[in-house]
Image (cartoon, rainbow, N blue to C red; front, side, top):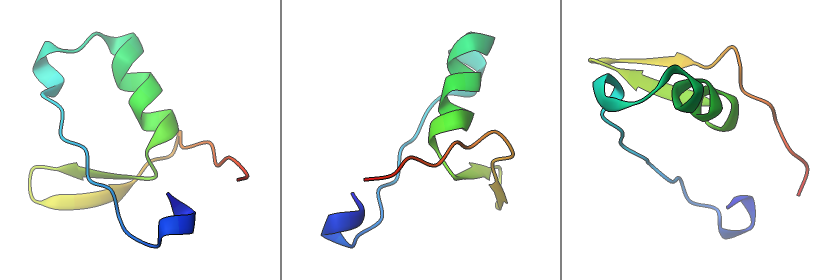
Length: 49
């Protein structure tokens, strides 16, 4: 996505996800919108392109 120079927004219903899926999403998404606040994911693992 970095090559395309635009943001990608993903939306998930957290109450219907397992903890394993939530952890995977936190590891692969640098920013998380929670209610009306944006937080930086402490679990995000940056990958080189």
